[in-house]
Length: 458
Ligand SMILES: Cc1cc2nc3c(=O)[nH]c(=O)nc-3n(C[C@H](O)[C@H](O)[C@H](O)COP(=O)(O)OP(=O)(O)OC[C@H]3O[C@@H](n4cnc5c(N)ncnc54)[C@H](O)[C@@H]3O)c2cc1C
Image 1 (cartoon, rainbow, N blue to C red):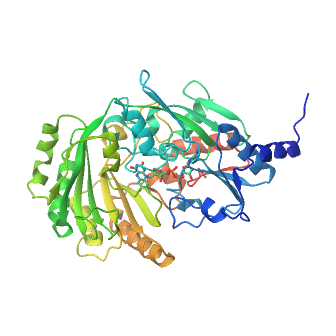
Image 2 (image 1 turned 90 degrees about the vertical axis):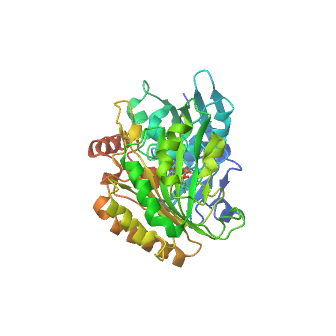
Image 3 (image 1 turned 180 degrees about the vertical axis):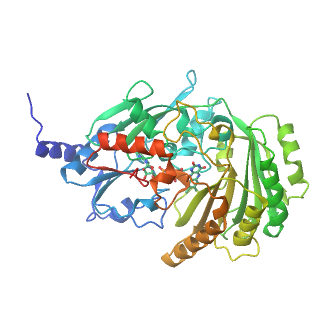
């Protein structure tokens, strides 16, 4: 029998990771440690770029041997709440980009570093779609472990509720595959409980039979905000069908070359609409908004890859400061507060403040859903500003606080992990029962707390 000593393990992992570890003394360190959010100054103990599940095993063994911790990072979109990484090996999965789509079972298998648009495009070739979020380059794994609010969520639920199987490396360096039959507790925890339970190497996701949507944006100059946002909120209060998702949003677009000429450097109030079904139904529901005479109306049938770009989220790293919250309801007074704090007459430094309607299937907690079984609020708000300097970041944060304080009477107790870009009290991320169960699973699986997540369970 061969006994694997810690030294042997370390030698084995160092050899396995040759060429895939970057340390602070290496010339490419400053590039290697960057996350998508350039405003976050990541200073980990080492960065590992695994190319396979076996490399991830080696990275976990390496961290354990040096008494360091491990944090997975798909892109770094939500790097802000991680905190100091001085004692942490950052495992950046960006080289793991394999995708396989099985059109018969409608299941996609993706490696840990796959980004949203890549999966949307691969699925679209078969007339299928994942429950993708708004941004083309958010990582599918981070997005799904946090819940996953898609434009199709009101009809089909959270992305986390549509996961078929997950492969991950646990804190003891084992590569395991979990699904409803195998390790069901861990499978439950991963679906909405975030990244605390292991380094995911692959996900299998159920796709939906959707290849296009009737979707686009109604645009008005920002000065029209009062009538537009009240009309939009009225529409959402009249229980639109689950097929329709709408967003009320302020956009103050910077004068950057990658923003199309008619919008560059200008400020707008917009309503985004995404409808799965007959356009005539959407047209009827949107008629009161169109009656307000938008200066531009881009709503038309578009393919799912085009839909993934509709929201105009940046497709490259940016220095940004953002945060989100859930709103229980959105009465007229709440809209007035949004207008007061972020509207035309305010001094808002926010590039975007959006309110998405939730509800529908997102609010239905089925027994076989995961740790985030449902989102118990009718709206999600997310606000963000460009923050190239600490001073700019402080200004954006202060303004988001002003908005949050004004909306306090309508803020839900629950917060949504993916839109939380500051460290949150875990009691607000999950129901009390789910939170206790997550803590028990974490304690059993990783008693040394080796695996770090941006939003830990305790
Ligand atoms: C512009 C923009 C648009 C967005 N739109 C949406 C949206 O429409 N809907 C929505 O729900 N969210 C949205 N988000 C939020 C987004 O889903 C979260 O920021 C999510 O955490 C990003 O995942 P990531 O892997 O890209 O980020 P990362 O910062 O790389 O990862 C975030 C966390 O995910 C976990 N994680 C990532 N990879 C792994 C892994 N392999 N194993 C274990 N844990 C892992 C870790 O805990 C990590 O700290 C948006 C964010 C931005 C900035």
